[in-house]
Image (tube, rainbow, N blue to C red):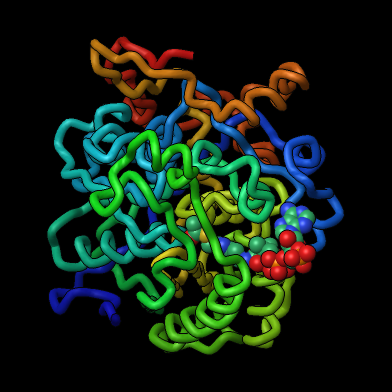
Length: 421
Ligand code: ACO
């Protein structure tokens, strides 16, 4: 599928803001050694993952998405009500309905945007970005908030060592804004290969197999994956999607300054680099610290890449993902916003953002028992409150008061109630 870089009327789209959020609790490979028959050595050698984040009981996909989204809006120098459309890519929504995007809209204090979720698994953020690009260049929206957010640790079978070691929680976001100025080379590639439909899937809970005591007893509410088949597809499609997007932008791989790939497995990323004859130094990797965060992985890595000085104005970057479906997607673009704007994210206090709950809410503790046991055995995790994304540059922790952003860029809580902890 090809999307034009600009509408015939000459309306261009560009990323104006970015942000991310990662929960504080960390599960290391050593923790997983206590849960399943695995080893740090196996996990690091086969995947490159060393640790992943786990959402606290009071956090949800929507709450993490809202923090990342509010940060992206602040970085763009906008107010929440400037956003016309909110897209949340996720395979772990808070509920089947309403959409997670609707919850995010309220939590960030936006009163006027349309909001909807995008379901394309790990490629979801790229699909949502492409949707935002189309809305903006078609003149249907001026500012679109695009979020990738996942709470995968509540959908894992902690007796299945082939999947529970891979995934983590987090969120990332960008704002895509209209511009009258040409935004430089831009190319998008999206693909879907339905023969891979049952290679990564979550069998129960949908209309084909509604949740029941039997489906739960069979563990059909957990993610299942054929790792080897997925690996084969991933290495092939990441390279072909990236190349197609680069060529659609009128570029060649040698023109690209940084690739931000889906953070699933470092061996997949290395194979893609080899296939494209692209040096690993120009590929951003943070999966060692987050694992695979599915739709959150690309925007979380992108925000970290920009904030850590890996991207500058005029750089040609590619972000590329693959996932269940099988889906894949890639975007090649020229970066056009001052990375120093990332400091504005510090004006957003995660504790001030609340996702409203229904009055008769009676939730159980959402943390899977095996995970809760490991976390409890270890005691509290000592991560500084302001260091939710490790590796953030010093300017990202500049006190909010000294950062020149509109006062209303820090979203007010939408409602008084909190999720139970
Ligand atoms: N610890 C120790 N041994 C393990 C573990 C583990 N955690 N997991 C599997 N093994 C064993 C297997 O049982 C098998 O043992 P056997 O040979 O005795 O049968 C052996 O290790 C090899 O298993 P493979 O599955 O062949 O291992 P592989 O090298 O393929 O690595 C992995 C597995 C890491 C899952 C890899 O296939 C992979 O990364 N696949 C891609 C997954 C992915 O990227 N998914 C992203 C999309 S997800 C989405 O969209 C939601």
